[in-house]
Amino acid sequence: MSAHKQVIMNTFKIIGMKHPEVLKQYKPQIEKMTSDVQFKDSANSILDFIEGRSLAIVTEQVDANTEQLGIVTNDLAETKDNVARIDETVQQHSEDIKDLNTEVTLQREELEVVKAELAEAMIDIERIDRKTVDTTPTWSHDVAKLLDPESNTDWRLLAKRLSYSNDDLKAWAAHHSPCMSMLVEWFATHNSSEATRAVYIVLKDMGRDDAATVVADAMKAAGELVPVDEPLDLKHPPSVFISYQWGVQEKAVILKEYLTNAGFSCWLDIGQMGGGDKLYEKIDNGIRAAKVILSLVTEKYAKSANCNKEVNLSVNLSKPMFPLLMEKMPWPPSGAMGPIFSEYLFVRFFQRENERKEGIYWPEAKIEELIMQIRQVIEPDEKLVSKEMDDWWLTKTGNRVVGAAEKKLDNTKNPDVFISYQWGKQKEVYAFYKKLKSLGFTCWLDIEQMGAGDSLYDKIDRGIRNCKVVLSCVTEKYSLSLNCRREISLTSSLSKPIVPLLLEKTTWPPAGPMSMPLAQLKYVDCSKEGSLADEGCFNEILRRMAEHGVSLGSDGKAKPTKGKEPEKPAKGKEPEKAAPPANSQTDAKAADKSNSPAAQPKPTQSEAPAPPAKPEPAPKATSKSCVLL
Image (cartoon, rainbow, N blue to C red; front, top):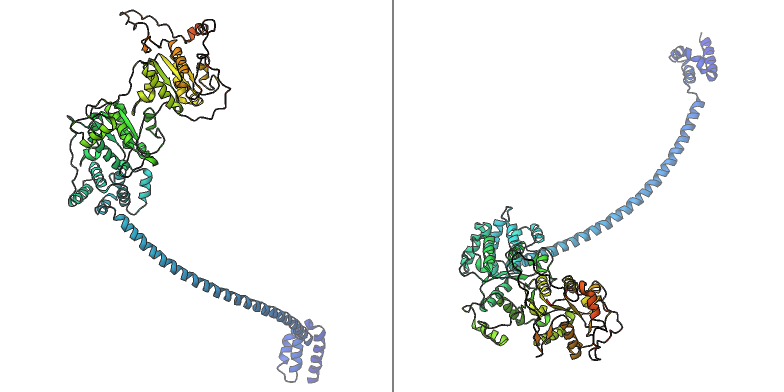
């Protein structure tokens, strides 16, 4: 039996080596054979065949595993290389980090230095702030605490009442204490006592009695007088109202002293407005009662809302107004005051470099001019005139201030001659004017008829309308002047006789708008230097004036125009129409005939006007006016 099993087992081995899948159905029986010690090894070998655990397969698996192991070994070598490179990179980064740490350390050290410097700067700033704040009164801090909180009557209203702009308010609004910043600026630019009075007055007017009380207590403690409300004395009101902006307050106070010593009582808000005043009511009363308004014009004055109200009220009440230009600026000022002041002549009330003297604000000539202008409207009060002012006036004019017969402006209502000229020829034109006056002619010349505060166009209009003949002093600049063109245009429209005086060599008729009214007229050639005063030229001018009814008598003096004044027509009758002047359009032909060589005696060589020289290119002129301001 054993031999039979051995044969079967050997057969299974042979079959298992070639076809192990055939033996799978006998696997359970073979597994049982493993329990028999005699057939155990053979049975396990057959099971290995069935399970595919033959030596060849194992060898193949070992070879495959060996190949995979080689691949892994290569990957491991590459990984080691990569790790080595990473180590180098990490090392480099470590060195960079060390350098960075060193840089950070240096930056920290520099930051500490900056912090130390900043701390020193802050100390300096605080020291400067303390010095700045020290310029303000001690009560400023208490008032700032009351006005800083937002309300309808906070620090902003105070700033506006003190004539600060919206830009100023915006700048202060960003500060920790806007009111304190505003007060620092206020006291840095104004006299301390007057600035304190002004703040007190405005606080009372705002209804901020809490803040006003703080200021009043401080003023009393310092021995200063607290303003009280003194009603305007309507029986003896101030004759001069001084309108100004706070920036020139100190000058306004000195001007008031000058004028008071000269005999003119003045209204100035510092002395007139006490606590509890109704601001606009007092200003209204002051302007209505005054006989003359002085406007102290500056750039800030022109932009001030309150100053604009004062000027508008003065104009509406037809008050004589004298603008005093307190600083160098364009005239008229820009803004709402421009149209109003454009017709007014100003007095220059600021010093030029060559006029500045320590202790004075204005040249004496300007004070004299201003007092002279005011005296055209107001008689000085003898009780107010100081001895110093009386003595000074005597040295200037040769007369006492009170009762003196000062030179009055020549307010001739019906002048014989209106002289139209441009500033560049003022000196020789004025000498010509004096010569005509010495012969008895009544003449209209801007610098004699017009003073500060006069309406520029109104006086010129009346002068041209009422004159008998217009002498037109023609130059290149004259023909380009806007105001001179207006004068000739008005003269032509009114059919007034025009006698052109050619004061320099130029084309005829002059180029521009004047060419039409002047083209048909004969000019008197006065183009040579000083020829306007030459006897021959002067006589020719007199002859041309005589053609229009303005002539000399036998005594060499001007004689009145022939003919009586026209009588007033009876009620219900139409007045007779006056014959038009000789140079009107209706008599143009007759005038041409009378001026022809056949109709006139041949002039002598001395009388005949020299032909104009070949015109030279004239310099470009930029004159804005032909009257002296």
